[in-house]
Amino acid sequence: MSIIEKTKNFFRLQRAEILRISWPTRKELVSHSVLILTVSLALAILFAVFDIGFDQLIKFLLTKVL
Image 1 (spheres, one colour):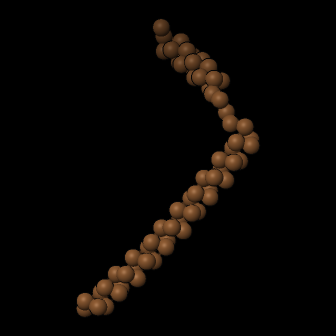
Image 2 (image 1 turned 180 degrees about the horizontal axis):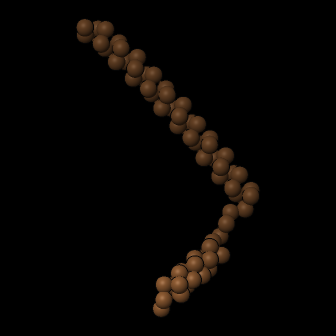
Image 3 (image 1 turned 60 degrees about the vertical axis):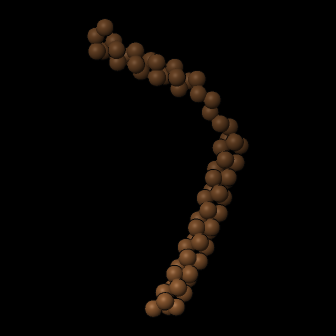
């Protein structure tokens, strides 16, 4: 097989694979996107609360020790 035939075969197989993909519906895409954004926001808030809490704890401990 020449390089051109191998390349054509490769792209033909890639196209066949892409056609087999089960793409999500618009409703599924929107619901999953909303879920991901909601969880991301919740985790960001949780990490911010922990960060502020640990910051205050470290400041408290440093002022008591020093």
